[in-house]
Image (cartoon, rainbow, N blue to C red):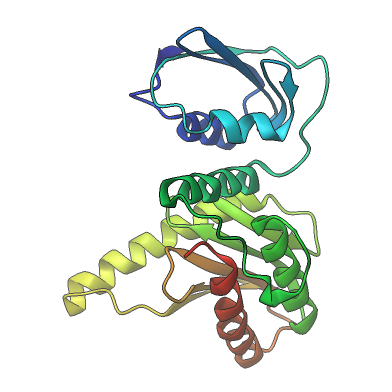
Length: 242
């Protein structure tokens, strides 16, 4: 697959390859400059640009708007220089772009007192703390309405990216239904009950993301689940970009 970056952005290309669990090499060219990004099973494993390697390469090229791309499947990187979650990398890249556009030296809100972490790491820390407060906690995630998984924490092995995409689709469907009935979307949260689990989705105040929590139906207390969701959604809002 090949095309123009004016038609498909670097962020879109990364998200597409990761969600589709691709193993591939993505070549990006702009003027006389060239960068490579490697994917393995839906994860970013390596990136190179000039003499630089690793995650910082993504942050440098994520703003490229002109140029070409070439995606070649089935090609693995010869080395691993990136291990962080791709969604966290994209969120961090978006934050850096915002800072550039604002021409500001504004830093992350340090009120959470967790040091100089990336935004995704901060949110993951909050999710872990919340998980310890919820009986029967299975997994929790912060997701954008574009289904981009920003950060997640799980007590069990679960495909969080798939769960995030399914929760986003459900919220969109519910929002559409509520809007048709009431004339506008008034949804605060949505609870899905299965035979084994509660799936609670709560919008993060003032943001375009939501907090999704999966808990064991046999041991979780629904009232506590909803309370913790509201409390921690407020904390997560402070860690997201303004």
